[in-house]
Every structure is written in structure tokens, then in C-alpha cells.
Length: 77
Image 1 (cartoon, rainbow, N blue to C red):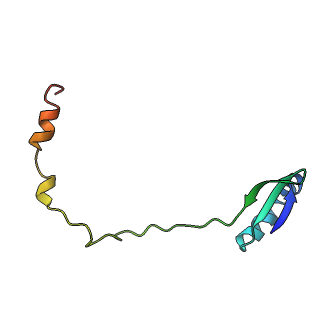
Image 2: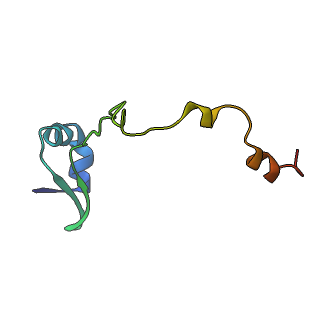
Image 3: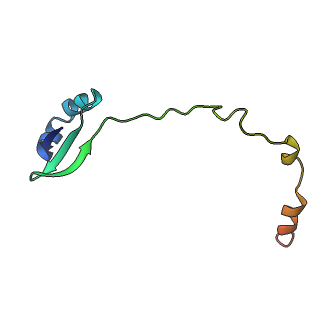
């Protein structure tokens, strides 16, 4: 792991980002004390349909009005 001071990080940010994209981790320090780590971004892809076939429901559950819910709101309608 490489450590650079804040001034160097500001001056050479583009070059540091290239190194990070290549998988390197860089620590930014102030007066020799580590302040932050620059690490490669890890993308988490969304997988659509990952639960297909694992969740079962009846379409009728989502049709029409639910009398129990209506009763809860009867004074507010």
C-alpha cells in the first residue's frame, strides 16, 4: 500500500486514480497520519428476476378492496 500526502494527492489525482483503477489501494495522509484510503470501486450489479419462481402469491390477493384495511381508515375517509 502506498501513502501520499494531501498536497501530492491533489497535484497528481489523475495519476493516482489510474493506479486505483488498476487495483491499487492508496492512503492519503496529513502530516504523516493516515486520513483516508482510496480504493477501487466495486460495482454490485443488479440481477433482475433473481427470485423468479421462489416467491409465490395469488393475484387475487392484490385485486379489489380489503375490508380490514378499509375498516382501519373508515373515520378518515
